Image 1 (cartoon, rainbow, N blue to C red):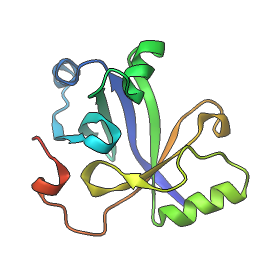
Image 2: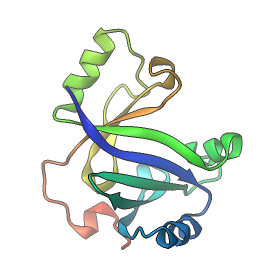
Image 3: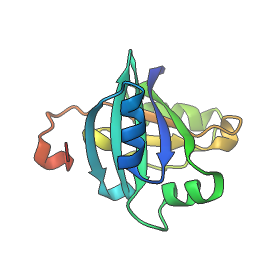
Image 4: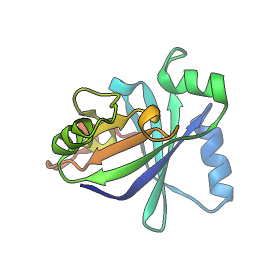
Length: 145
């Protein structure tokens, strides 16, 4: 089953500029890393139990770059924790929801992620997040800071 909110994703043009603005608000990044398979550089900021994920595209034709081009910077997705991502994907598909992903893909910090299409969630892109079951090192995460 779907668990609590894991993070809220915010698409930004330039991560460094966004981090400077969020620092003024009192947020410091927990981590910053490149997720090459998704073509993004991300920073996670914590506020209470929920994280904010700032996403900058690494490619001019990437998903985040296209999002920012069409809609401007702002809310991109809401992510929820799941214990078993494949089981949850199957459950949602069996109930008629449309998924963006046929299989989970690697996300930040070695997590598995998959997306529920906005058509199935009243215009909101939802992300399912399963925490990694293996210890993560800075080397294999691509962590920058």
